[in-house]
Length: 80
Length: 390
Image 1: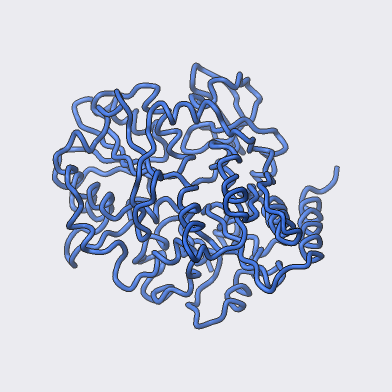
Image 2: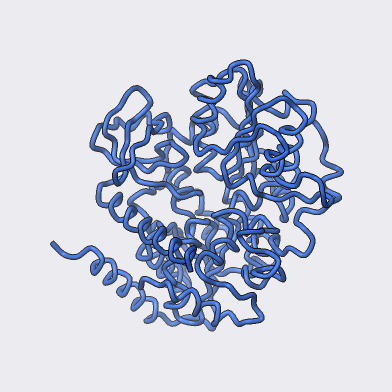
């Protein structure tokens, strides 16, 4: 998928950030954002385990809503 | 606090009203080149709420679908013949190649036949596996567009174990659009450019669409509001007869993208001519490893990968009867394929567009379009509209 998922950084350890999205925790690689001066609390767009861009909290929330709708719609189709 | 749902619905309504107020030609075709866009359009039922003269065309937006047949064949043969562990993004495992009945036709079948093939979700998993299996050759069959290729480059730039090599089959998105626009029949009047590809590469990458070809272009995000804003931008450009590049996704996209990511990509890989399944060779659309990174090139490491693919070219790019080649280029809607919904379904896919989550056929099927056309486009859109959020 060329679709990134927003996650919030909870902690940073070198190039690895411990991130969370809606209760799901993942380690995310920050190598592509090494010049971005990221801090815990920041939101990033994550694709295949790598943070691609820093984003705002508002954008993270609207993207999470979109994923909920897509997943819900697909689940309905799958069981139809 | 206002209800966020009512806010987004009001936003969608606003864009639709603005679109309906435009004086538009009899037919306008807006192409998207991103599986994520097509999925968002289909799930939100945007086709059914737009005026009838606006067509939304899914174009070359699925890296799994356009991964050359010979590369998938090579990956299968490597996994079967050599003592390697092959890792690939999960979507690749079911992609079929054209071999006689009875032969192994997908990585999934090769795995069932005993090959060590493992699906991964991140390049980091390939590195971890290579560290765990220190005495085993691990090969990462790396497919994808820029959003995936930049992480693969980051993986290599950060340093990987010697026993990890990459079978690189990555592609740039924009050259396929350039190829269509350079052809006599591009098949679209405006472009909605991919959101997260542009997050990495920058909106400016799409400027050629407006400047060179005088077609409206807008980068859009993945919500219905952002897509509608992108459609409105391109339609207003048509209405005013003034094509430019608009960025309707400033939340994640800047003009220059992610400079660090672009630098790493350029440091690790050079851009080369590359074959696209069902399309042919597109100049400067693929990647090859540079300099010191070449020692991790699986094609140099394994003799079974060193072939000229003459035999593969003879078998044809797509399975017999499959219209994926025309679906990929936006020349046919998925349900206009002769096999859609009859011989070819997600449970038993024939063509790559029905395999991948990013394939237009798979997305349309997931959105509820079940009938092949002979049913009309309107009826197909009615099906999609059952799931509309607008």
